[in-house]
Amino acid sequence: MPEKETLERARQDKREGKAPSTQAGEFVREEIEHIREGKHGARSTKQAIAIGLSKARRAGVELPPSESSSKETKEQAKRDLRKAGKKTKSSKRARATRKALKREGRTAASKEALSRQARAAARKRSKASRSRSAKKAAATRKK
Image (tube, rainbow, N blue to C red):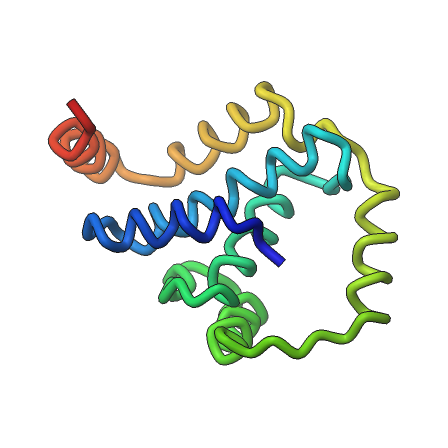
């Protein structure tokens, strides 16, 4: 269950007319914080991001999967979007997931790992695409 503050920040982003990916970023940020404070771990930075995106979809952020996602990821995203707003959860499954994540390492949320992940993601994009989003970020940045 996402924290109240995270939900509020995501709602604020929605009110400001920001993109669903920006709203979902709040949940990813929360997940990274959880790993850093030792609540649980993650096998990789990619997994930590995936958990955050899943939480965002279940919290009602209308975030479609990317075009390049695998069939399994797209199906999971569809399930997450369908579960938005529903409160029922299997306590056994939640406990098992938490227990499994507790066994994982904490380095997935380190600054180095996040930097590596960001660089790898950026490398997959074209120069024009990167430039476009940088210009958009500069234009929409809070003054």
